[in-house]
Image (cartoon, rainbow, N blue to C red; front, side, top):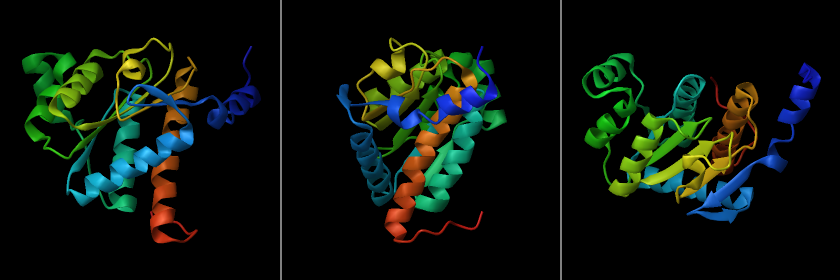
Length: 198
């Protein structure tokens, strides 16, 4: 039986178990982070927006990381999970379209989508991902559970995957992976070891 100490030890192995793909090909985590940094920088330079989508705990994570990207990387960064917007879309078009419908109205060339799903198969996330790919947006996916999941197997700019099936490990692991990308880019661009005043 998994105990808290073992849970934490498992979480500490994130760097050795996290997997990465770039445009569908296997890549090192370092390559993935390099590409993520390029995506955030190029989106900022084009005055584009990074859009974040997720469900449940991943939705809360998106809200946190979106403000971190805005604050630390100075890139336009938005979630699509405002309650009145989501409930309107769900009521009018079904929950599977709560993200792709507004993204279709709001996204512009040069934007980037970050799609987070523990299972990698949530239909509303998959629909949003498919819209973004068809529209030519840069796309980052973050998933876990089975390696056959949809997000991990779409050819995206960057795909990150954790081979874990416990929600807590997955959610904290996903947030750590993305915090590392944002915070290290922030430190590199500001050439210091301090932290922002949050």
